[in-house]
Image (cartoon, rainbow, N blue to C red; front, side, top):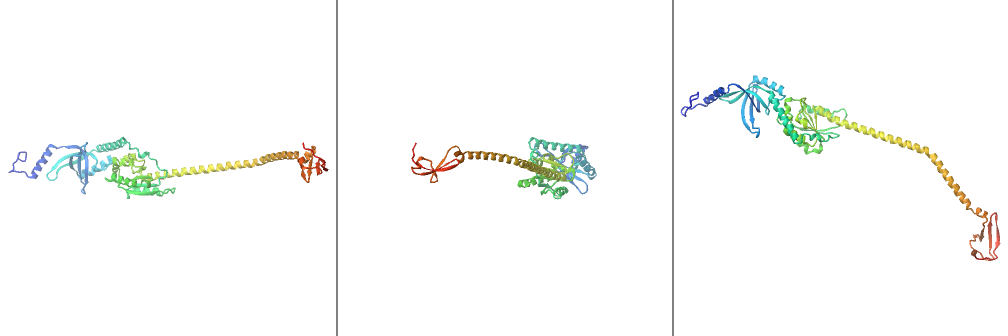
Length: 402
């Protein structure tokens, strides 16, 4: 053919340029219009001249393998309008990894080959896809039963040992440390930074690596705080990934997030034990936790003081009552003892020798010893007999045994 379609032969070959020119004309004829096409941005490269060069791919939904790929160009004039519009509408930068709906024209250049010229973009498609992915992540975490695990952990009474995951250069990290260490109550906190990128493609793996480092010395820490602070809203999608959320949900220490945004909470916020809007708010949360325990201890102290005071007052009253009762008790005791002594005296009086003698009895002695038996004397012995009123002496004449 000739250049318009007639088959040629080996003796009349086409140059590569001619062949490519045929392809260009065929493409231009077959695909003259603009087309809306969906795909995933696998590469986005902004040139110094203002143009943006992209690579658009399509993956098999079952295997995730690439099934189609095309290079594209967004010329500077269009890109200068498209980029801020897309960011404003989606809250996400025009960057690799997102799905887009683009209006393109198909071109074939003899030197550069097949390309797509991007004319327009529909942000609603990307918003829907991002929301769909986010909901799929939340559903997967829910179905696996892990989404609420971190929230079920008991928050420490005194969260003083704080492992911080953040970028060392992030303004939010400085705000967090200033708010925490310079709190108005004099509470002491111990913090250590576990560095991780807070934007870009390395966020997910960076935070997971930091969590692994903290887990190696788990007993050293009370809580983990993930803070970001500032930055574009477009950079927040990195906190919606499954792997990051799954690691945080199952981490054995309570996680506090302070990512610093005002849009709907990220998946990381959802799985964290407690979510704060900003790094400063995260620090205030820890200070207030300490303050609550300080107030509780103050209340306990006041309760102890009151209990001791009441006990002392009660014992004082009891002692005063005892003191007042001592004279009465003593009088009763003395009265009882006097009565006992009176009875003893009466018994003694009734048993006295004088009383016995008065009753007609007598006491006989020989050589100063009482005569208890007739065998104690013999005829001729001189004895002394005591009776009531005196005594007399007599001599034994005889004795008779009974």
